Length: 114
Image 1 (spheres, rainbow, N blue to C red):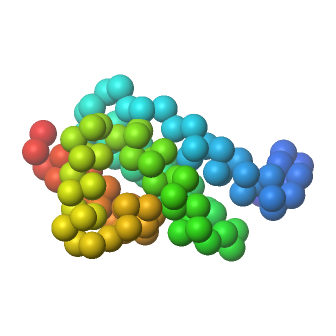
Image 2 (image 1 turned 45 degrees about the horizontal axis):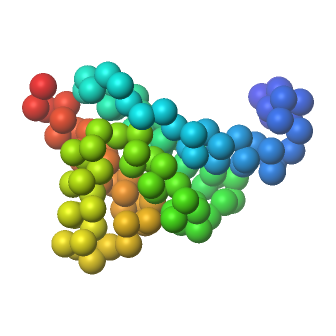
Image 3 (image 1 turned 90 degrees about the horizontal axis):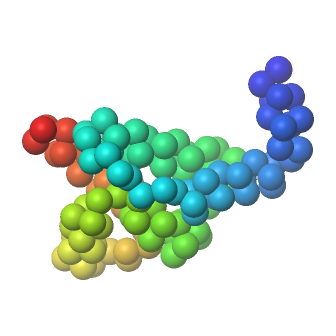
């Protein structure tokens, strides 16, 4: 039943994939810097990336486009920390898998600080 609802709403797999990509590309920067808002943003991004993976999309191939868009939605300090971390660990800044692991730790750290 769920598949039918999704299929009727989006038509086909390509449209579903595009809807997830559009969402990630058009993230609104976080305004409320509360721990819950950060957590919600992270969960939203992670959920979309996991959905793309489940649909068979290689999210790493979108990294150069998506990583900066995802980062811009987070506070400037977290973005700066990612750049420093990526350079120190010799990682590509566009590695969405490493970025999401990093963001998970940052969100947890931020939740523990408040």
